[in-house]
Amino acid sequence: MKISGFSFVRNGFDYGVPFLESLQSILPVCDEFIMVVGNSNDGTREAIEALQSNKIKIIDTVWDMNLKKGGKIFAQQTNIGIDAASGNWCFHIQADEVIHENDLPKIKQAIEQNDDNKNVDGFILPFLHFWGGYNYIRNTRRIHKHEVRIFRNGIGVRSYRDSQGFRKFSSINNYNNGKEPGEKLHVKKIDAPIFHYNGIRPPAAFRKKAEQMGFFYKTEEQVAQELDAKKYDWDNVDRVEPFTGKHPALMQPKADAQDWTYIYNPAKAVWKTKDRIMQPIEDILGFKFGEYRNYKLVK
Image 1 (tube, rainbow, N blue to C red):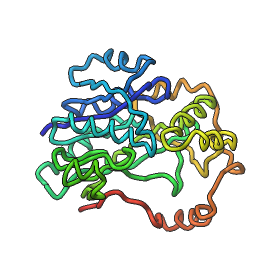
Image 2: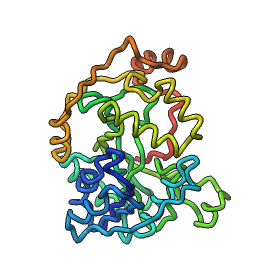
Image 3: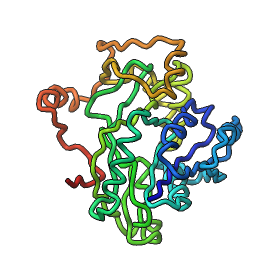
Image 4: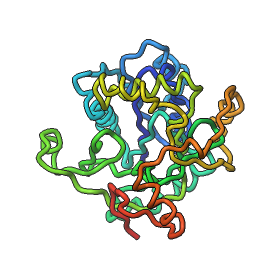
């Protein structure tokens, strides 16, 4: 059994994502790691090379900005990583995601135990979405609770939509031509959370990153309007709660070095009307109504 880790990144330092920690967090359970590096000018590629691991294989790419709409460029870069993977299993991690070192044995064991079970296409992992600082996580119905991050290689899996999830297709041509919606993967859950550090940056950097990413989904006019409306500010959030756990060891230096203060203010919380009504009900029931699941759970 061979596990291929894979990810993609471009100008990781400029975007303020922990891409080095992300890569290194799953490297111990991977036999190889495919890092798809877009044309960068901030030292991203050099930093990956400096890790000096014979497991890491760098693929250089030039981003086609004609694929910006809908985040298609992210799916394209993800698929390049899939196509280069030689393992029996693929382990995807995005540049702002980190796995805790204590969970690696659990992940490795789950893959090994299901290696011969062809009814299992892959695995979903739960998410911890950090917001504002290293001491808060967002905990509302607006965030995705689980995503596919591990799947079998060679069963026609492609990145679905903007690389957030995956589906399997009968052929690459059908995927590329949009001739089929793809089949949801049959997965099991591993109780090993993804530490998602997307919402952590100093105030100016938080706004800059949100603006940069916005251009991959919206028009320049839409991004400008949302910037004016302060939709990319810390306070533009519904609800967060204190994080009381321990960060992965790779991320602890960054957490210790936080030089800004974020304090959640419920009085400034921004809720959509439906969410304001549904959230208290779901909190009591412990169930999310109408949850989008891009996978099928198997026992």
